[in-house]
Image (cartoon, rainbow, N blue to C red; front, top):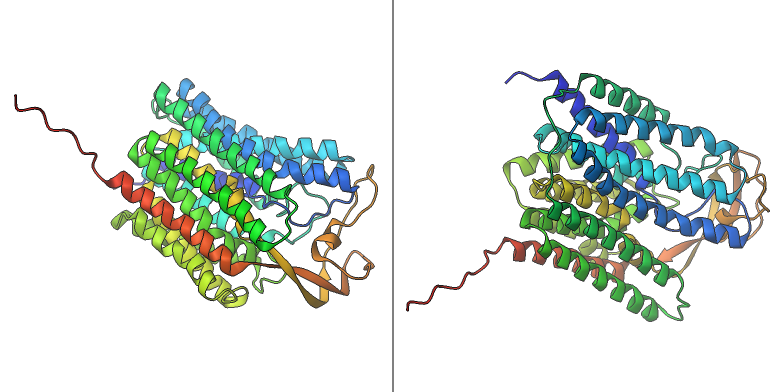
Length: 469
C-alpha cells in the first residue's frame, strides 16, 4: 500500500502535538518551585496549578466540539499552530514576569493552549489509524516520562517540570503550519451527535472538577495520623471511581472502556511517576524518555493484534501490587526503568485496545491521566522524613516584586540555610518518606475496580423475552 505523504505529516504533527499538550498538562500537585515569595502568595500560586490542568483537560473537549462544527481539518491545524505559538510566547514571557498574578495568568494561558492542541489533534486525526496511534503514543509516553524533569529547575517556570523545549516547540509549530497548508479540503473532521457532545463535555468537566475539589479537600485537612489521611484519601478515591463508573455506563461501551482504561492506567502509574520525579531517581532524563516511549509503542503494537483492555490493566496492576508486597523494590536506578517499561507496555496495551471510535470520548479519555490528582495524593501520603547528606545542583531566580522565601528548602527540609552560588550546594537535609505499601494496596484496588468495570461493559445486556400470549 503506497504511503500518503499528507497522512504522514498529519501523524507526525499529531505526535508532536500530543507530546507538547501532555508536557504542559503534566504538572504534579505540590512539588518544589524556583519561585520565591511569601507563604500566602506561594499557597495561591501552588493552588492554581491543578486548577489550570483541570481547565486544560475540559478545554480539549470544548475545542474538539467547536472544530467539528466547522468540519475543516485545515482550520484545526491552524488552531494547533496558533496554540503552539501561544505556548512559545508564554515561554518567552516567563523570565520577565514580576509577580504571582502575572505568573498565574501565564499558567492558565498555557494550559488552555495545551487543551486546544489536544482537542484539535483529536479532531484532525481521529478515525485514521496511524494518526490516532501517533497521538496516543505522544500523550501517553509523555505522561509517563515527563516527571523525570521535575527537579530540573530552570530560572523561572510555571510548572514543576519546567517549560517545553525549543526542540519541541519549533518542530510542532512548523509541522502544524505545513499540515494546514497541505490539508485535503475534501476530508472533514469526524462529526459528533449532540448527545455525544453533551456527554463528553459533562464527563470531562465532572471528572476534572471532582478531582480538583477532592484534592482541595485532601490538602486542607489537619491530619493527626496516617489512618485519618487514608480515610480521607480512600473516600476520595471511591468517589472518583464511582463517578467514572457512572460516566462509563452512561456513554457507549467503547467510550466507557476507554475512560476506565485511562483511569486504571493513571492509578497504576502514580508510584512510578513519584519515584521518577523524586530527588534521587538514579536515571538520566533521556533514559526515562527512551524507555517510556519504546514501551508504550510496543504496547500499542501488541494491541493491534491482541485487543485486551483487561490484559493491559492486569499488566499495569503489577506496579501497585509489587509496591504493596515489596515497597522498596525499584525506586531508583535500572530497576526503576524496568518498572517504567512494564508500566509503558501495559498502558499502551490498555489504551490501544480501548481506543473509541467516537472522537469526543477520545478527547475525554486522553485528558483523564492529567486530572487524576486524587491518585497522586494516594501515592504521596507523608509518613516521615529520611535524612540525606550530599550535594545538589540547581539555580533560582526570585520574582522581582515578591518577598523572599525558600519553597525548595521547605520541600526538602534543609536543616541549615544553604548558600546558593548559581551552581551547587552541599548540606544535610531531609526528604519525604511515603506510605508506599498502603498506597500500593489502594491503587491496586482502584486498577482492579476499573478492570471489573471494563468486564461489566463487555457483557451483553439481557433482553426480556416476549410474552407467548
